[in-house]
Structure formats: C-alpha cells, structure tokens
Length: 125
Image (cartoon, rainbow, N blue to C red):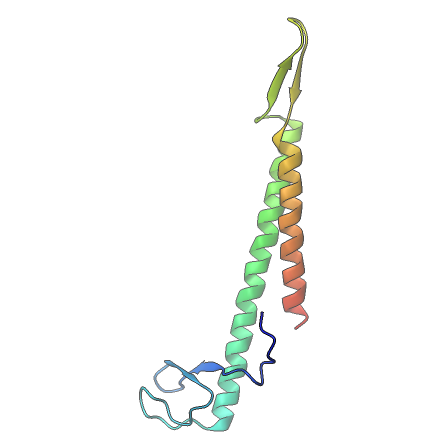
C-alpha cells in the first residue's frame, strides 16, 4: 500500500509495438524506438489498471472460497469426527471430542472475512 496517489507514481504499461513494459515518462520506447503518444499512454495505463484489478478480485474470490471450504470441512468433521480424541472415562463409556473442528471453523471464518474485505475494497476502487 502506497501513500502516493496513482497520478504521482511512475506507472508502467506495455509498448503498443513490442509489448515490453515502459514507464509513462517516456515518449519513445527504449526497446523498439517506437514513438508513444499521450492518448496511447493513457489507454494502455487504464487497460493495465483494469487487468490488475481483475487479477486482484480473482485472488480475493479464491481466498473466500478457500475459507468457505475450510468452514465446510470443519462442519463435516463436527458431524462425523475424523480427527478427534477419544476420552475413555471407564471401560463402558467413551466420548469423542472433535478437537480440530472449532479451530478449523475459526480459521476458515477468518480467511473468508479477510478475502471478503479485500474483495469489497477492490470492487469499490
């Protein structure tokens, strides 16, 4: 996260001719010597920002799905314990304690909320 607004940062974009990245301060591509106009710069920078935003949104969606998957696995483990302790207080009485379910549920909930916060932040930019 940067404290500078996007207008003050040096931004890069692909050259319309060769596709290599150049910064917005250049008027000629340093790789292929193609002149770059200001409208080409603006269009390329806006396109690059949109692609970056879509990539970040996709990453946050995957984070949300991973968190929901962990929550689902925690709930399944709660109903049918697979990882648990078996506490045997006497020879005829035993209690199954699904120890990982609460931990997995909290971790999954945290991951989902972090992903949701990032998704909403990127969507509202």
